[in-house]
Length: 306
Image 1 (cartoon, helix red, strand yellow):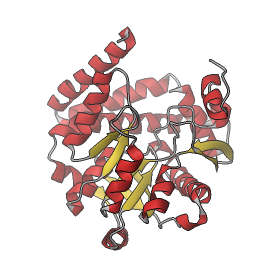
Image 2: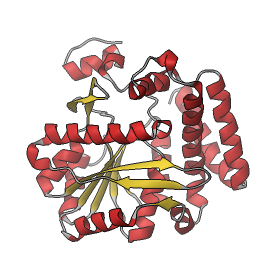
Image 3: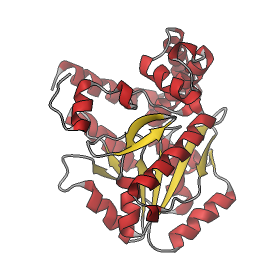
């Protein structure tokens, strides 16, 4: 384990121990103050680049006010993540709003018995959205977790999400690849939730996203196509105070093919992110123009090294 990995593991461990002991108001104020400090220094460069695509402008022209809101939103996500394991989950779910008509829509999809794939971007607090699903429907769901380093940090995140009632499959290094395990859950008529705008593999689907080239995971559309499950894009965003909202969009027709369905998913993600850019927590390179040499070689099958 490297020194940086050890520091990350200890940092997250301290967060889960210490932040949950603070009064809610104190914890949120402290995280917001930290976010303001980071944004006062310009904020993360990659986040600014990503938001520039959303606004169709240059990084230099991204408003400082948006960077401040974005960092506050990101800090809110982490504050809630550290506090959720000790919160009353039923009360936490009551802070999340979903239109009754949308609840009826996915209930109808669930009643078909073929399972549902909920696909969502890194927006708002996807863990809180999962808590709402479990608390309001009584149904758990399966999802995939990126394997982090060191293993102890990955295990902390798995334990955290399992404590919320999620079923977690590792993206890599598990007893078997997660695709068949997820497909099995769908064939049982269950729910799968996947973060779906950032491809972590070398075989994602090429898409246009905010007018530029990137790749998104084939998994959501492919799972729906092969199992007969319903594919529904989902978006979570924050309101003032502790309130937040989930939006369930119209189901995506996967009979048009995985590539076309994934492009449609990208289009829906773009529409929702543009409506709530401050809550999109994408701090990593996403578009092809920002890929490292190593990532480009992975995608293109080359052997360059960064």
